[in-house]
Length: 528
Image 1 (cartoon, rainbow, N blue to C red):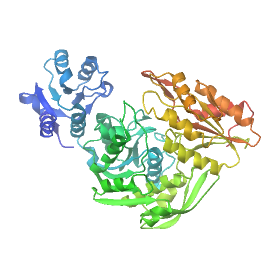
Image 2: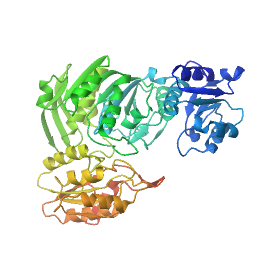
Image 3: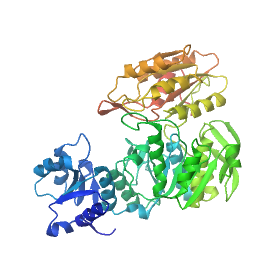
Image 4: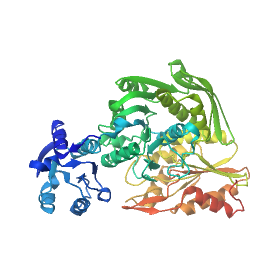
């Protein structure tokens, strides 16, 4: 990594029109070496640049970062005077656009490690996590490595780091994710860790918020995959309208070398128009229309059973059967996306087949079986209208003849449309709905559930149970009372072990654990 100095970072910000002024960068201070950047004082380290950001920022964070060895700080004009008084004499860079400056400075401070690893970015309204884990399982399947997708397991070797809404793993750090795409200083730390760990690939979900608010500025993407687009994340705290949401997603192509696009997506002509900015374009699709439009990767002869899906895959370099070790007919679309990205990377057929045959996505289409075949549960992160359409349409086909009981909620502080759309969409497919808590943040769980109840179509059986464990127990009781058997759908939380309540993330048990505990009360035990 080339030596980066404070003078270099200041010059870079100035060239990009992002620097208002500096102080304390005179003489030898300007030549101070910088080896990283942080916006969380818990990660602050010697020779790092500290970035003072956020409405909840406290001057004490800067004091802590300087004590840990940070050599300078970046801030906005609103906080410059206050922070200068807190840390007199410390080199200060004042940004005219702190968000963008933070990204540019972080990339430089960490030495642009994206140039030493293949970065694979995935965006879309539905499927980002699943495609990420499928791609990772394929890349990890080389040389007999485990393809379970269990990030961080000591017995699981990896070729790929992963950053997404489920887990973060970079070869050094491994933990349950908070944001789909981290803030820029954290993102670049993870890229550097992956390179230092000699991982050849980084697979990452790229959210609309990350693109809109410049978290991924200056990050070079070797491949950018656009899965689909639907209405989501529209609220005062996210995107004001669909147009803003869609435009943010499209920005992924501005920093990619190769684009991979789903021809079955809504708004595909607009997506393709933006994708043509890349050096190369590859397409995929699973409908007749996509094949007729000339998709490079497509699927035929789709069949499902025993908790898996098999299809015949057609690519520019090979054709043959592929089995995905997960239920859900829509996972054929996701598998084709991963296969198309592998086509760009030159991954051989045998490795693709091996990876998809053993892929597991934590909290995605997890089939929970008991020794009583009457009741089965599926845990899935489905949380918006598009994901509900795909999830339920597949469930009613794959588990025909069973009653469908769904447990779900809606988050607080964002995506308000879900409180109307999810009950309406679920009512088209499910026999019984139970509304419960799902990361309420600062909103009232009772108010959220009441809004969902009010939006439920007349005649649709449903109830509200605010406590999620109690809601799951009620669903299991109802399922065992169904003579024809039932499928219990536990949606949105997946394998998560925390509820977002107020400003805290409170520990909770995963939905799967709660299901099995409730089933055991009926004498049903997990099937081996």
